[in-house]
Length: 193
Image (cartoon, rainbow, N blue to C red; front, side, top):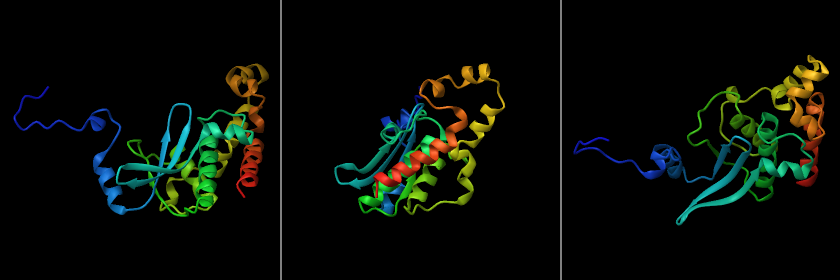
Protein backbone atom coordinates (compact mmCIF):
# COMPACT_ATOMS: atom_id res chain seq x y z
CA UNK A 1 0.00 0.00 0.00
CA UNK A 2 1.22 3.51 -0.81
CA UNK A 3 2.48 5.60 2.07
CA UNK A 4 2.83 8.94 0.32
CA UNK A 5 1.01 11.97 1.69
CA UNK A 6 -0.49 12.61 -1.75
CA UNK A 7 -1.91 9.11 -2.20
CA UNK A 8 -5.57 9.24 -3.15
CA UNK A 9 -7.92 6.36 -2.45
CA UNK A 10 -10.34 5.78 -5.32
CA UNK A 11 -14.07 5.38 -4.81
CA UNK A 12 -15.15 1.91 -3.76
CA UNK A 13 -17.00 1.06 -7.01
CA UNK A 14 -13.90 2.06 -9.01
CA UNK A 15 -11.64 -0.10 -6.81
CA UNK A 16 -14.03 -3.03 -7.34
CA UNK A 17 -13.96 -2.45 -11.11
CA UNK A 18 -17.67 -1.66 -11.35
CA UNK A 19 -17.79 2.02 -12.38
CA UNK A 20 -15.67 4.21 -14.62
CA UNK A 21 -16.43 7.61 -13.12
CA UNK A 22 -14.77 9.63 -15.89
CA UNK A 23 -17.04 8.03 -18.47
CA UNK A 24 -20.07 8.31 -16.18
CA UNK A 25 -19.57 12.07 -15.67
CA UNK A 26 -19.50 12.58 -19.44
CA UNK A 27 -22.73 10.60 -19.83
CA UNK A 28 -24.44 12.51 -17.01
CA UNK A 29 -23.70 15.82 -18.74
CA UNK A 30 -25.47 14.68 -21.93
CA UNK A 31 -28.85 14.63 -20.14
CA UNK A 32 -30.14 11.75 -22.29
CA UNK A 33 -31.36 8.27 -21.52
CA UNK A 34 -28.68 5.59 -21.58
CA UNK A 35 -29.01 2.08 -22.97
CA UNK A 36 -26.96 0.07 -20.48
CA UNK A 37 -25.77 -3.27 -21.91
CA UNK A 38 -24.21 -5.85 -19.60
CA UNK A 39 -23.08 -9.27 -20.79
CA UNK A 40 -22.61 -11.84 -18.03
CA UNK A 41 -21.28 -15.37 -18.43
CA UNK A 42 -24.80 -16.72 -19.07
CA UNK A 43 -27.07 -13.82 -20.02
CA UNK A 44 -27.40 -10.45 -21.71
CA UNK A 45 -29.11 -7.62 -19.83
CA UNK A 46 -30.28 -4.37 -21.45
CA UNK A 47 -31.79 -1.45 -19.55
CA UNK A 48 -32.91 2.04 -20.47
CA UNK A 49 -31.70 4.24 -17.64
CA UNK A 50 -32.49 7.86 -16.83
CA UNK A 51 -30.40 9.82 -14.36
CA UNK A 52 -32.61 11.15 -11.57
CA UNK A 53 -32.04 13.24 -8.46
CA UNK A 54 -32.08 10.19 -6.19
CA UNK A 55 -30.02 7.96 -8.51
CA UNK A 56 -30.59 6.09 -11.74
CA UNK A 57 -34.12 5.12 -12.73
CA UNK A 58 -34.69 2.08 -14.94
CA UNK A 59 -37.40 2.86 -17.49
CA UNK A 60 -37.37 -0.27 -19.72
CA UNK A 61 -35.45 -3.52 -19.42
CA UNK A 62 -34.99 -6.83 -21.19
CA UNK A 63 -33.06 -9.94 -20.24
CA UNK A 64 -32.09 -12.98 -22.30
CA UNK A 65 -34.08 -15.13 -19.82
CA UNK A 66 -37.25 -13.53 -21.24
CA UNK A 67 -36.55 -15.08 -24.67
CA UNK A 68 -37.91 -18.41 -23.39
CA UNK A 69 -41.39 -16.79 -23.36
CA UNK A 70 -41.07 -16.42 -27.14
CA UNK A 71 -39.92 -20.00 -27.69
CA UNK A 72 -36.12 -19.60 -27.65
CA UNK A 73 -34.58 -23.03 -27.03
CA UNK A 74 -30.91 -22.00 -27.10
CA UNK A 75 -28.92 -20.64 -24.22
CA UNK A 76 -28.74 -16.98 -23.29
CA UNK A 77 -25.04 -16.47 -23.79
CA UNK A 78 -24.55 -16.61 -27.55
CA UNK A 79 -24.58 -13.86 -30.18
CA UNK A 80 -28.05 -14.78 -31.46
CA UNK A 81 -29.54 -14.49 -27.97
CA UNK A 82 -27.79 -11.13 -27.49
CA UNK A 83 -29.32 -9.82 -30.73
CA UNK A 84 -32.80 -11.09 -29.83
CA UNK A 85 -32.54 -9.53 -26.36
CA UNK A 86 -31.65 -6.20 -27.97
CA UNK A 87 -34.50 -6.59 -30.45
CA UNK A 88 -36.98 -7.31 -27.64
CA UNK A 89 -35.65 -4.33 -25.69
CA UNK A 90 -36.01 -2.06 -28.73
CA UNK A 91 -39.63 -3.09 -29.26
CA UNK A 92 -40.41 -2.51 -25.55
CA UNK A 93 -38.69 0.91 -25.63
CA UNK A 94 -40.69 1.99 -28.68
CA UNK A 95 -43.92 0.84 -26.99
CA UNK A 96 -43.03 3.03 -23.99
CA UNK A 97 -42.35 6.03 -26.28
CA UNK A 98 -38.53 6.05 -26.27
CA UNK A 99 -37.11 6.19 -29.79
CA UNK A 100 -33.60 7.53 -29.12
CA UNK A 101 -30.86 6.73 -26.62
CA UNK A 102 -27.09 6.42 -26.25
CA UNK A 103 -25.05 3.27 -25.63
CA UNK A 104 -23.34 2.67 -22.26
CA UNK A 105 -21.09 -0.41 -22.17
CA UNK A 106 -19.49 0.41 -18.82
CA UNK A 107 -16.09 -1.16 -18.20
CA UNK A 108 -16.48 -3.85 -20.86
CA UNK A 109 -13.89 -3.58 -23.65
CA UNK A 110 -15.15 -2.22 -26.96
CA UNK A 111 -14.32 -4.99 -29.43
CA UNK A 112 -15.83 -5.08 -32.91
CA UNK A 113 -18.49 -7.76 -33.51
CA UNK A 114 -19.00 -8.82 -29.87
CA UNK A 115 -22.28 -9.58 -28.10
CA UNK A 116 -22.51 -5.95 -26.97
CA UNK A 117 -22.72 -4.84 -30.57
CA UNK A 118 -25.02 -7.72 -31.52
CA UNK A 119 -27.36 -6.31 -28.87
CA UNK A 120 -26.94 -2.84 -30.37
CA UNK A 121 -27.83 -4.20 -33.83
CA UNK A 122 -30.99 -5.74 -32.40
CA UNK A 123 -32.01 -2.40 -30.90
CA UNK A 124 -31.29 -0.62 -34.18
CA UNK A 125 -33.29 -3.17 -36.19
CA UNK A 126 -36.22 -2.69 -33.79
CA UNK A 127 -36.30 1.00 -34.77
CA UNK A 128 -34.56 2.82 -31.90
CA UNK A 129 -31.94 5.38 -32.91
CA UNK A 130 -28.55 4.95 -31.20
CA UNK A 131 -25.49 6.88 -32.47
CA UNK A 132 -22.92 4.30 -33.62
CA UNK A 133 -20.35 3.37 -36.24
CA UNK A 134 -21.42 0.62 -38.67
CA UNK A 135 -17.95 -0.97 -38.49
CA UNK A 136 -18.51 -2.36 -34.97
CA UNK A 137 -21.66 -4.34 -35.80
CA UNK A 138 -21.35 -8.11 -36.35
CA UNK A 139 -22.25 -9.72 -39.66
CA UNK A 140 -25.85 -10.79 -40.26
CA UNK A 141 -24.84 -14.43 -40.85
CA UNK A 142 -23.07 -14.56 -37.48
CA UNK A 143 -26.09 -13.07 -35.70
CA UNK A 144 -28.40 -15.68 -37.26
CA UNK A 145 -26.05 -18.49 -36.16
CA UNK A 146 -25.21 -19.71 -39.66
CA UNK A 147 -21.59 -20.33 -38.66
CA UNK A 148 -22.79 -22.75 -35.95
CA UNK A 149 -25.05 -24.57 -38.42
CA UNK A 150 -22.22 -24.95 -40.96
CA UNK A 151 -19.84 -26.19 -38.27
CA UNK A 152 -22.40 -28.75 -37.08
CA UNK A 153 -22.96 -29.99 -40.66
CA UNK A 154 -19.25 -30.74 -40.99
CA UNK A 155 -19.32 -33.14 -38.00
CA UNK A 156 -20.39 -36.73 -37.66
CA UNK A 157 -23.29 -37.57 -35.32
CA UNK A 158 -21.18 -38.74 -32.39
CA UNK A 159 -19.02 -35.62 -32.36
CA UNK A 160 -22.07 -33.39 -32.83
CA UNK A 161 -23.84 -35.03 -29.86
CA UNK A 162 -20.78 -34.38 -27.71
CA UNK A 163 -20.20 -30.74 -28.72
CA UNK A 164 -23.84 -29.63 -28.92
CA UNK A 165 -25.28 -31.69 -26.07
CA UNK A 166 -26.99 -28.69 -24.44
CA UNK A 167 -28.74 -27.67 -27.67
CA UNK A 168 -29.88 -31.24 -28.37
CA UNK A 169 -31.08 -31.69 -24.77
CA UNK A 170 -33.29 -28.60 -25.19
CA UNK A 171 -34.76 -29.99 -28.42
CA UNK A 172 -32.83 -27.79 -30.85
CA UNK A 173 -30.62 -29.25 -33.56
CA UNK A 174 -27.61 -26.99 -34.25
CA UNK A 175 -28.36 -27.06 -37.99
CA UNK A 176 -31.78 -25.49 -37.29
CA UNK A 177 -30.47 -22.45 -35.38
CA UNK A 178 -30.91 -19.90 -38.25
CA UNK A 179 -34.53 -20.97 -38.85
CA UNK A 180 -35.26 -21.05 -35.11
CA UNK A 181 -33.75 -17.55 -34.79
CA UNK A 182 -36.11 -16.20 -37.46
CA UNK A 183 -39.16 -17.84 -35.89
CA UNK A 184 -38.38 -16.34 -32.46
CA UNK A 185 -37.81 -12.92 -34.04
CA UNK A 186 -41.20 -13.09 -35.76
CA UNK A 187 -42.86 -14.12 -32.45
CA UNK A 188 -41.34 -11.04 -30.79
CA UNK A 189 -42.76 -8.92 -33.64
CA UNK A 190 -46.23 -10.44 -33.17
CA UNK A 191 -46.22 -10.02 -29.40
CA UNK A 192 -45.03 -6.40 -29.41
CA UNK A 193 -47.28 -4.90 -32.09
